[in-house]
Length: 441
View 1 (cartoon, rainbow, N blue to C red):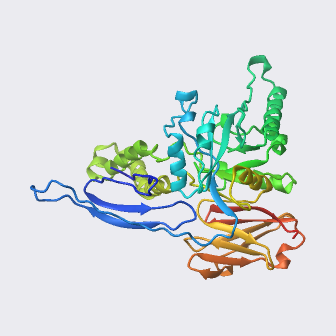
View 2 (cartoon, helix red, strand yellow):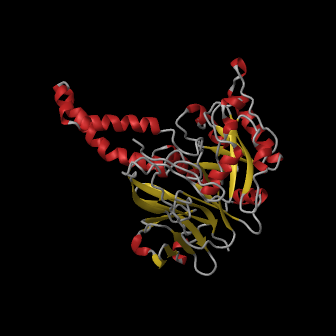
View 3 (cartoon, rainbow, N blue to C red):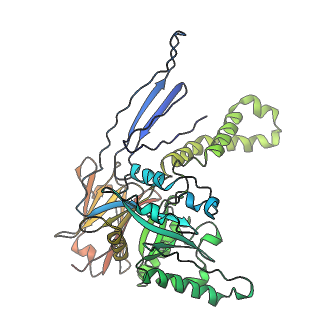
């Protein structure tokens, strides 16, 4: 079984795929912000024994932007790993992609800028800087391992290291002082300190509750890690909730996203997927259940039924929702894109994050939310500085194009709030977050 196979186009935007005989769905994407293309094809070999060549088919695909972006908006990736995070270079993660391969993956996903944020070292920095070209701006970065959590050092050439105290020296005060020192060092070197995935599944990579008062040390917080969807109750949902509570307290951190990719082909789940598929196929055979103890048959039947519903969804998520720039940051800046301007935009909060639909706010005459999406938007949530929350459904959106919708914010809705932020939701999933926009014009 091949549940899916991902290829990344080369510099000439070509990819070659060899498939066994059968029926296949081919999907071509250029990442968030672009339409996708799908076609079902049947692969057949020649039956004539005198013909040895295989059937070859060329597919030429042109993908369109969801819509025209307003001037000054650029999209990119802020959390990605390369082989420099692997044990080969003193790291701990099984990453095999070279620096050029990471850039190729980011560009294939439509990124105009990208941060390569390896663990433990800055060995990628010089090579990453060399990836700069007219259509791509590299951002140097490092993901610093600490006593509790990961801190991103964005835009800093220096190797900033959190010195983890051991034994009797491992006191709360020493740990606190290290966070204060490294965030100060990042700023002194012209960079941005960012707290990554504060509610990760592992205690060693998540933020400690004993350091709640240290959030103001950071300029940005990764509230959306691409390893998981944005759902209430999971790590991303908890990060979003904490971020909003900090904003309400007057502690402003820019909310960012990062794919946290360690495998550009996202095939790390292939072996597990094949095992699950084999078990489900085995359970579908009626003769199998008859050979098993009667007391466990109902449970196995339930497992089989759940698998038939959930497993395809899991495969779809693995195939479409993982990999480079599976969540994106859109930043707004003037002029030619550069590392300095990307960092400035993040520091000022001129940033929108998304896993698909695009969300912008225009406040020239009438305050207007602009939505670009392949699917009809479901729910727009407006959150105001004074605590008010307004929800608007499909009937409130004004369609102005095939994939473009608007919502006009009234003066009554704005009220006296100092800022407004917007969320676009589909069911229980948050799909796009627009950082707070100041209401003072």
